[in-house]
Length: 298
Image 1 (cartoon, rainbow, N blue to C red):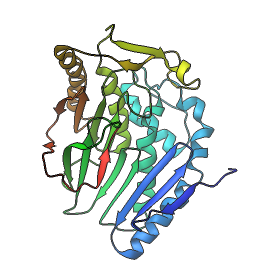
Image 2: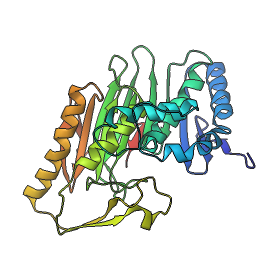
Image 3: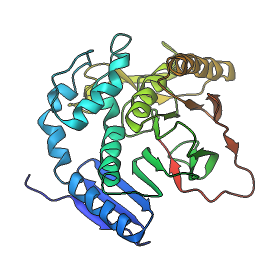
């Protein structure tokens, strides 16, 4: 390792910022002052060198996932475990779960230092959660990351099985095979949510539609794990029935994953329309905004 990551408390004095290359985390812990301090120290220590661990196995992480793996790193193996359930059904690589897996790893390091009332690690909208007894976590959903304003809100309670949230879509940091503006998934872990969000977002699609522009992923980013597969670069005007059809395609995928126990719920968004899969209530934002702890976006 020839560089040091950036590690610093934010100006509010409550949250920790960890950044190294493409990994950019916002961390917050609540509890006794000593426990929070120890958790932040553990987060910083585990974060240092983590990117190098992943880079050491990058060729395998960018290869199509199989049921079995020879990956060695703890985070790398977590990434593989998250995508393995999809290996027989579609093309997917362990990189589809990298953000959620990293968030999980840092949260785990914090929790090993002692009891915390609540904690989260937010890796660009992919969030690993810890909730103590009676705790809750509120999440804001944005229509699109290039637009202002929280559109919906959801509350996760300590007795919910959800401990991971992730979002994927064509406006996000990664390429998408589909046309969803955003698909936000709730799951038992952040790595599982991350993988599922990728799969569902890819399923929100209208194959062959003339208003949709696609390009080989490796023409946009030469080292993309998607290679020459076509990814969505632009979506033109769609009719209302076409939007509904694309969303329903993704919703059917989400329902299957819900029935398999791979997710706890999903919110699919396209061109201002939304479908919700699963039992979690999503509250519509009206004139009075809620005080939210995080805004989740692609």
